[in-house]
Image 1 (spheres, rainbow, N blue to C red):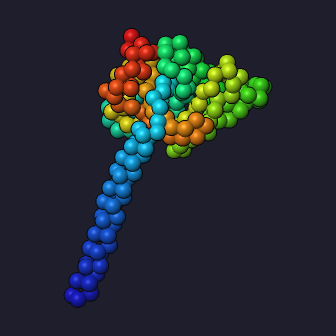
Image 2: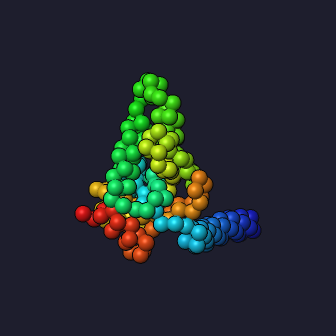
Image 3: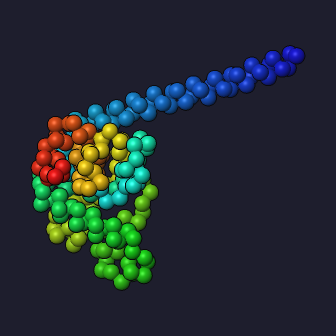
Length: 196
């Protein structure tokens, strides 16, 4: 009977320890997310981003709370013409993503480089790459991994692919989607007429 009590007590201690660790990790994660958002808001600049790739279930169903995505953005002022340029580039990049290896081997080096970047499709927090200038018609445009919370998606995301974001830095930095109710987001969406 003593061994049963000791064994039960030991099991209970292990369970309580793991529960404590899980709670601790949850609070740390929440604190870390809040600190990251605060840092980006202090140092970031509002930009227009266009989705290149995202989980279609995440975009269409309300059951998924958050998911990774790949965006492209420019630090140029948001406008309808910039949105069109970014959408065209997003389509070109997605075509490179879906191209097979034989097709890519026959492309110019700048397209091969872009294909290599986009085919590495595992999410990496903070990853940002400059899109080759030959693909952007000389504009400085970045490809960035982003983790998007559902409440940060505008209603028009599946049709416009436009996403208001804050970015810090240039060639390196952080990115986060803005809530559609954020004043900077409203200005970006109005500038690109995303809702029409």
